[in-house]
Image (tube, rainbow, N blue to C red; front, side, top):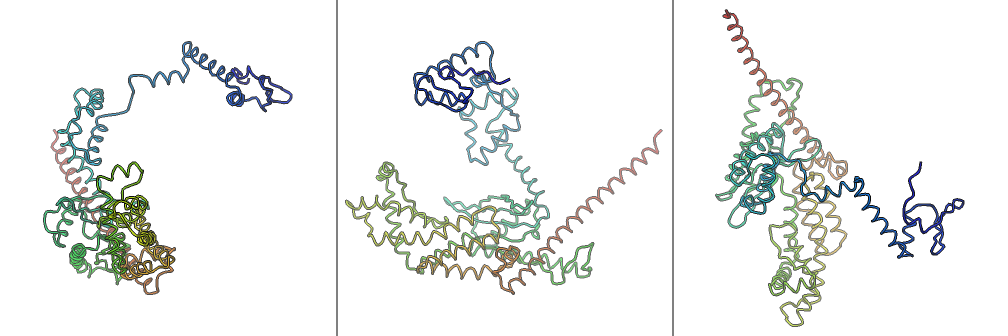
Length: 516
């Protein structure tokens, strides 16, 4: 049985069963089919009075329905207007949310005492348990406990796994923070774990940084042998730190090699190549930082420093407080000043200034401090266009899932785009990239990654491929070594457990023999 055709719009139409169409009683228009929505749409477009009549009848019908027998829609509406709502919460969820507010979102402990926050929180806390409370004091006590749990979890994930470290130092307001990340692949995906954000209270020498890093590694039970590579910037202190840590690893492996001299290379199915060495710590320079250094040198070699300094001075003048409202009225963004430690900051400053050309020129009509000759505006546009490929590359290099071969592809693509620009500044930039590329390809880890990537392997020379293969063999053997050490540790733990069980069993047998 079909649906009841009770739509009020049908009162203004006559249905022709033979032609299967509706005829409008008002204007005589034919409408194919018998769908009420089409009839109602016709009334809305051409006969407003009739359409309003239909809408009024719909409202009346809905009110009667609500009063007699509540429909699902009516019930939902009443629930939405209800004074109370039901949510699934427990003590653990509330505590974790408050800890996240402080540690992840950067809120102060004072926020937990704010009257507005308490108005939200108190009913929830009371509903969960009258004896349950949340305040700044008990959350302070829970944070160290939560941190220990996270550390233990990271320990389990990183145990005897080969990892890469990413290390950097940030300084602001006379404080310096050492950031340490551990990176490894789990289920085919790069995972990043923040191990520490530690304040440095001494001179940032290589030996001091090394000591601080070793304390963090000890905290997470990370053996120095697990470190595959360390990514840092190009600072002399960072390079010194990597070299010092590399020497320490060499000393450790010297002991391992002496212990293994009398052992057969075939041990429990694990083969160690006679030429196998894994005593070199790989130091990798931050790709984005390397790119920025190339840009800096190119600007210097192209004699553009003075021009950029003039542009910077103009930006400073455009940023004075008295012009803030004018920028807002014209819906124009104020240009930003560049910062040497921020990627692409000079490019962003120049591009923002270029977007203020008309505004600056209008100000220059009354004040020559804002004047910039037309040929200089053209030069500014030229610099921005030339730096565009490097800006795009820098943004891509900040991807969390970036691999070494991805980096190499981005680097090559950037060089190609610069070459296609065919101007003197692009040529200088391309030359600087080529110089650094030669140095980058001395890294066996980069060669190994490119060798395994079918997109770029063709770019390697025969000698580079040989180096890549040897490096990959060494890494494979190191992985086998770590796997073997895990097996030995597990066997020892099991053996210790079995011995303990045997002791208990012997004691139990002795006690049973004395049972009366």
